[in-house]
Image 1 (cartoon, rainbow, N blue to C red):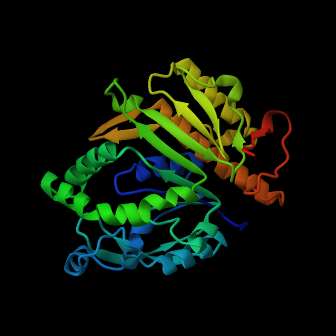
Image 2: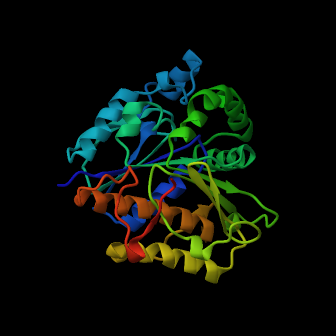
Length: 318
């Protein structure tokens, strides 16, 4: 099997990593994607962390060296016997055999913490919602799915704040895409704004013909060595569809992946869809499949030197 393309999505607890990565895995399809949560590489169970006064955000609380080795094995087409951590009971379950696949999608708290970890990733994504929104998401998730009370979640958030600032947040400097879903006056979870920082470490699809420089509506703003892509939550559905079509046109070799399931997420038992989430997932998907095409052609996908012609042209941030 050819070397896998590794897509890493990093962010603090409750930032939306699972929502983004599960959507990518659905589109790439069973049998073509291996999925891994770096939470499985916690060094201590929940009781031990409490006794040690250690949070799961601290590098010392995780086997980052083993995670790095396993990612390298999976990237190179070799299976691993991976640990399994349960958020339901805070303990470890029997390890699982994980087979390699053409794409490896990884989510975690510290995926980009070390240079060795960063180097094993082809696409690096950081989720960085405003703190108030992340806390609200974490409270809702942990109380409904992980058996915590609201007071327990809030106390744990406060306890983790120092480690989040020291170890998690600095990783945004190493991300190719930094994604922030932002609340607005609509107060509708399906219509959050999305701000994306697009770094010059990857060639991004050229969406400028469909975007304004400033003002209302989606915008693309040039900054030093990066672009800021703003997607408003109240984006007209037809405009959202046009943006999606523009990205799909630039990866015509991956038409078989087209699906209406991008942008889906759940609130409780309700299945909802967000245009801004769909566009974020589609941009990450674009980088995954173009990295695979570049690797197959012997082109260095991370240097910005890939050739650009016609519909496959890219927006290079130089």
